[in-house]
View 1 (tube, rainbow, N blue to C red):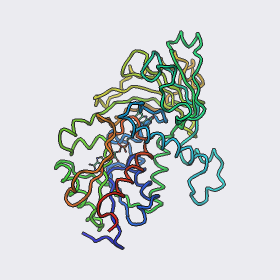
View 2 (tube, rainbow, N blue to C red; view 1 turned 120 degrees about the vertical axis):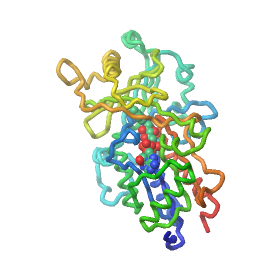
View 3 (cartoon, helix red, strand yellow; view 1 turned 135 degrees about the horizontal axis):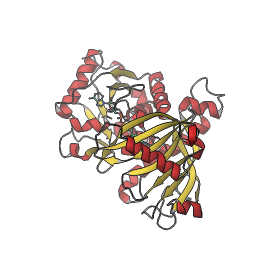
Amino acid sequence: MATPKDGKKHITLLGAGIISLQTALSLLTSTTSQNCTITIIASHLPGDLSLDYTSPRAGGIWRTFATSRPEDAELRQFDRRTYNAWMELLEQGDGTVGTENESKDERVKRVGLGIKECVNFWGHETEETQGGGKRLWWAGENGVVRDFEVLDISDDEKARGIHFGVRYKTISINVPRYLYYVFERVRALGVRIIKADVDMSYGLEGVVKGVGRILEQHNLPEPFALINCTALSARHFLPSPEKDNIFPVRGQTILVRGESHQGRTFTDFGIDDELAYVIPRPGSGSTILGGCKQIGNWSPDMDEVLNERILERIKKGKLAEELRTGPNGEFEVLSKQVGFRPGRKGGPRVEVEDVKKEGVWVVHSYGHSGGGYQNSIGCAEQVVKLVNGLPGIDS
Ligand SMILES: Cc1cc2nc3c(=O)[nH]c(=O)nc-3n(C[C@H](O)[C@H](O)[C@H](O)COP(=O)(O)OP(=O)(O)OC[C@H]3O[C@@H](n4cnc5c(N)ncnc54)[C@H](O)[C@@H]3O)c2cc1C
């Protein structure tokens, strides 16, 4: 095994989804970068398509799922930080040389994020909507989102089953583009990328050894810390009871031609695992329609009957009228996809293993379920703090 050069600590991230890539970027743009080198090892990289790789299959939009309950405090902070960081990125740029004079539209296309108005409708009262929106922690004076307002629900909307609604500014994501943008940034900052499968058959210690073997083959030093960003795959090598906390939340989406003016969601209309959403992919001329949240469902097969329900619900709710540009007022379908959100009981696991494994610190960051983009920056900054607090990081 090679020895670290310049006394620098070698940090290895396992995975190349949004969680790993953003963590690498946050490490590189923090003070940690001065005394570490970074390698990413992953089976799938941006541009690859696989059911074992959720990030390219997201909606995606900033629409927090954190509640105002005490146990969601960390998640609220992750989501808040990501919203603010994205706004800053879109308004001020990222400092990349040569982009100083780009227009806002050029930036949207380059980065894959865009500021959009978002409307959320609810079909009946929920914990969130009680008190006319006052319990929405992300709204109002100390909230997160800009230009928040509670909507007057018209008779026509009531007839469509809408009970309550709000409007605000959010950030919508052209997911394949944004994933690639973060990937390009970490590569430009010198992160080594190794495409390889790590054997997960021999527990966490086996994974650490497997990572060590791959690094050795590339003449790289063993890691000081390994950051586990393997999402649902973590269930293959973590012990019980933790492995039993990890479960899929199956989603199904339809990509259609045209970019809707707003993001729109309609939830809580009486079917627990289905919802209606319209998510424009900024700068791409396309929009994602969804969807469902099927807990524990591993089916990779496209459910065409569900797709019909999704399209009918969006038509009936008049949620994307501007996109009905096909013959007979139909949507122009470009593609359909299934994806598995990496669910975890108790929310994302962002913590350090108590003791080193095979001489390596292991930091976990997985289980971000349906919010891995919207909490990515806040979560990555928490991982940076954990890495900076590891015994021996400064020696
Ligand atoms: C339909 C749908 C809609 C969504 N909408 C939104 C939204 O609107 N907003 C939002 O914030 N989020 C949304 N999400 C959730 C978001 O996509 C996920 O939270 C996020 O992509 C998880 O990223 P990740 O990096 O943890 O996992 P992944 O993207 O799955 O990455 C896991 C990585 O680990 C690697 N890996 C695993 N095992 C091994 C191994 N043995 N060896 C080497 N590499 C390995 C894989 O190759 C991959 O690179 C949505 C998801 C779906 C499915």
